Amino acid sequence: MNVVIRVDASSMIGYGHVMRCLTFADLLRESGSTVSFITRKYNDNLDNLIKSSGYKIFSLPSIHKSEKVSLIGFEKWLGVSQDIDAKDTIKMLGILNPDLLVIDHYSLDTQWESILRPRVKSILVIDDMANRKHNCDWLLDQNYFSDINRYDSLIPSDAIRIFGPKYSLLRKQFLSYKRKINRASTIKRVFIFFGGVDPYNLTLVALKSLQHPKLKHLKLDVVIGANNSHIDEIELFLATLDNAVLHVQIYNIAKLMSKSDLAIGAGGSSTWERFAIGLPSIVITFGKDQEQSLKELHKNNITTWLGNVDQVNEAKLSDAIIKLIDSPSRIYSKTKKAQDLVDGYGAKRVVDLIKYGLSDNNLVSRFAKPQDSKLYWEWANDAKVRKNAFNEDFIEWEEHKKWFETNLSNSNVILLIIERDSVPIGQVRFNKEGANFKIDYSLAKQFRGKNLAIPMLNEAIDYLKTIEASILIAEVKKNNIASIKVFERIGFLKKGLIKGENKVIFQLKIN
Image 1 (cartoon, rainbow, N blue to C red):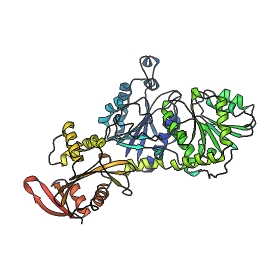
Image 2 (cartoon, rainbow, N blue to C red; image 1 turned 90 degrees about the vertical axis):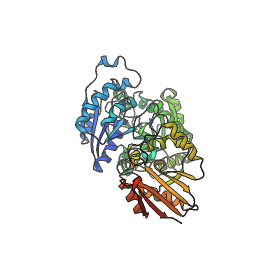
Image 3 (cartoon, rainbow, N blue to C red; image 1 turned 120 degrees about the vertical axis):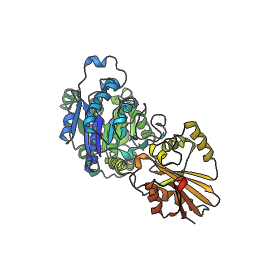
């Protein structure tokens, strides 16, 4: 695969987007893909880090103050309008010709993606805000949330959703330094890190909170980025302490985290890094993109969330630390839940999913639901599906809606969706005709060519074997060689060719 990643970093945007994209890029490169980055020239970006990691960067022009005047919302972070950024990106794509375009940027949405769509084979969006529409084939949100339908109106219904902390894009170092936890955990060393930028200087707030008489005995590891604008103030304060060490722009942060007993930090990607290590944490969020996930983690007793930056002060943070120190059982419970949630293999899961599809292990079938109607419609109108159908006409929405509602309530029709890890990969339909059933199937376009049709059909047929059925019939277009081979490999026998209808008939005895 030829992969291009569109991502930016700056003191305003933060550095987490680039860091997780670098992790993703490393795994893609190890699997044989070619990876390039497209970034815009900001004074405080991470282009040097990307280059030092061995990747080519194609730089978009630097921005001018005059371009920012009419921008609103997250476009202010981008520095130009989405249309201008899209046109600049297209110039680069003419050179790169990617199979996959990865977008990790709060300033970009369906407006930008729709302009790029004709230029690339597929699009993966990395998002965690669910606050805007996307035109994509894949959407990755590694956050922890209970509302699995929050993207329903924001992405195409046939886009593959990759949801949850099990898909966290973490570097390999977080696999190597997992802490051993025990029920008698005590806090002796504290790790403080509020991201590479720390715009609100929460590092200093944490340091001052740790001057409480009950906390002065703790050893402190303080981590900041090289571009932290508060570095002089932090260094000046640390000079008055003899129990703290400052670490600036360190790479192997996992090793340092593993030596600590408690973390104080921000939300975002750092949350999943701490979970993978098994490091209990007290978290202060910067904004809405982090808030909802941390609320749910706090509610389920997985981490301690104190609130947003405007809701926290030194006294509140001191009290939270003291409460944890006084309750080892709470520390153990939170840490165990966190480590169970994030095992560190998330990046590999995402790469395997996109490059190779889902493995044929643990496929499950479920009955279609009313809310699956639009997904079926998108699948049915896919160009390849229509080409292989006996009626190749586009299916209008109202026509499909009526068909779906009718078949969903028809006792002679079984509509199954095949999934792995809650990701739908395709559908199988059985129509009862006397004692026999006709079979029809389609595979989501993102999973074609990955040897999943046979295990998907086997999973569905295994379900059919649990009810009274004797013969399974498949009707396939003569020139649909792929499906003919699939049915033959499953064990269907060719029973005839209807020349006038260009149709091959297959049968399988199942009971």
